[in-house]
Image (cartoon, rainbow, N blue to C red; front, side, top):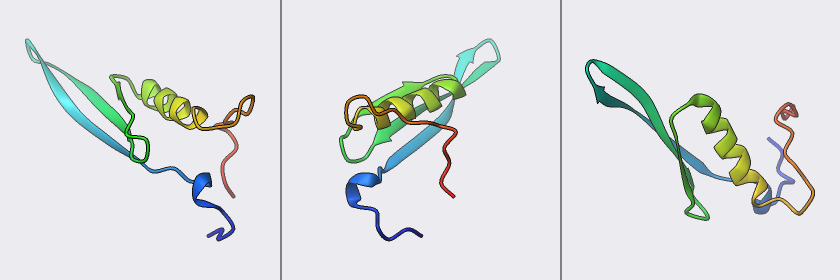
Amino acid sequence: MDQTRSPSDTRLFTVRVWREDLGAGRREWRGEVHDVVSGERRYFREWAALLASLQALLEAQEPTGQQIDPSNEPK
């Protein structure tokens, strides 16, 4: 574990998912991403929207012009 990171280099989210009954035997997964520090919440209905929500929440805290590269995984 990298001990040189400052608290501003980390973020804490909770993700909640549940099945919603749409009637007529149809059900759908829905969810919520909660940024624990800022309190912002985003809701999603598709898995791709979960990733987009996380990226938007992360980019909102980045300095102007710096973007998150989702393919740049920690080693």
